[in-house]
Amino acid sequence: MNERQHSSVKILFALTLVHFTGDFYSSFTTPLFPAFMAKLNLSLAEVGLIAGINRFLAFIVQPVAGYMADRYQGRMIILGGLLMAVVFIPLSGIAGNYWALLVFIGLGSIGSSLFHPSVAGMVPLYAGTRKSFSMSVFNTGGTLAFAVGPFCITTIVSLWGLGAMPATMAFGLLVLLYLWHIVPAPQSEGMADTGFIGTLKNQFGKVWRAIFLIWLVMVLRAIVGQSFMTFMPVLLVKRGYSLVSGGAMITLFTLAGTISGLLSGYLADRVGSRPIFLLAHLLMTPVLLGMLALPGSWVYAGIAAAGFFVLATLPLGVTLAQDLAPGGRSMVSSLMMGLAYGLGGAVAPIVGKLADITSVETVLQGVAFLPLLAIPLIFCFPKRTA
Image: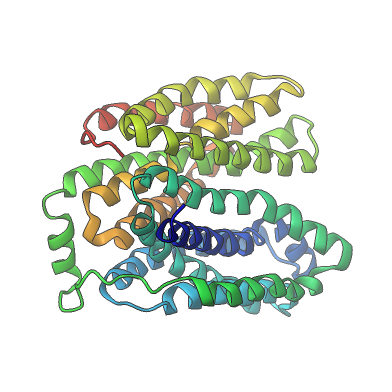
């Protein structure tokens, strides 16, 4: 490995570490809702507002952060955003009332949303000819964080209480010290003199239809993934499984997606993204329906298979869109990740309401058919090698 390749690998590792660290802290909130409810006597409506704000901020902040990252050089969006997540989310453990809790989690969520587009936009610059695989490795940082973060923070809180959460800042601050010496400044795309509309015209004018198709597929995938991640644990508990089983389900689902993301990125660099999208979406529906029908311990095998296919294409959508609009890498990353994620999460209350009217199992069976709606859209994807 020559010096330039070594430097690129080092930077890609640092970008992935940014992703892992930020998402590690972001994953603290949801599994601690029962502890927050017990400490502050919160209602389900108040808990729902916190969850909704998390998704809303990803929806709003990421596209704006992506737009700013493509206009200006500087590491403040990356390191400053990560610092906000590292500091404010642990402070939620010592919040004395609901509004303080809401402010701490909200500021931490803004920080997490800030750095995502910038670091995702930098990955292709150091990936060489292996853009899809490099993006898959980068995405692995996030999925792995959401797999191990809930287990780590619930263990800490179970042993020492919510008051111990600020101590977790130590890990993030040490990581930030390392990243300060490694992470380079993003490369501006020279759009400082163009407004938001001008940027859209310059970067997406000729390819906006293709990018819109990719985005629609990513939104459908987000709806499916978040619906199952949110309501499958509820269904398991109703069937007699323990709360620990519900947590294990989230970990298993995301770990399987981590593996499939790496594999899909590796294959996409060789056969292109479109065949991977088609295979994943064709198999997603039968796998999800099969998981819902599996009895006993077999359900865990079904959950692993579901996570494998549902999360497989997450990095590919970002890479394919960046390939179409290389001048707006950060902004297009925010559309494929933040905006798609936000819309996918916004549908969760509707899915929950339908589950109240019918049943969780019935609604999830219906959601399982959504991937098939993406098949005609995928056939319209541009033929690219990545």
